[in-house]
Image (cartoon, rainbow, N blue to C red; front, side, top):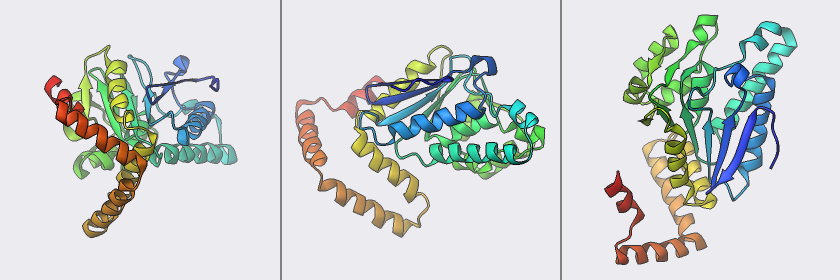
Length: 264
């Protein structure tokens, strides 16, 4: 596996774990970390051993946003190259072909929150806080990313004020799907990522495509599109194997879905 300077990567149980690892900057995204995340995602895009990607920092902090010293120390073409690199990263995460989970602890300001919002699902520690803080530095935040997960008024309030909200409020308004006790973030987020990944990369890639595309269609187009996807899946050997396995589990009373419901 590739060695990175500011990134720890590993693959286990179908999950590609992408851990930001620049403690001196609290994982702020400068030139190198941008490039390393893009490279890691690219390496896993066609890797059948990876069915889901988990973004995580530590149990104390996730990502401090853009490396502001880079912006302060650059101008002209260099600053343009940096913002172009940021766009490349944002698109790489936002349109990634496999499901992504963000695990957020501590304050996730500005671009740190944006990275989480680009992921499909966000799990937060009770100590997490989220804010579109770019406005404090006379920049705009990533409004579309906030709006994607919450309502218009909440998105605009965060976007216009830059004021943070805590983990419980983030869950209430939809930025976060689950809040977990401090110290259990990695375990909880990895459990979710593994539940997604157990379906295998062939299926999760198809499901991610549906999630990305169907939400931008009208109801008739989306219904027709999703039925065509179902028709395609029914032709695959994967379906033949899974339907047989599923029926056997139902007959024996060992459905994974009902087991999880009973244990939740």
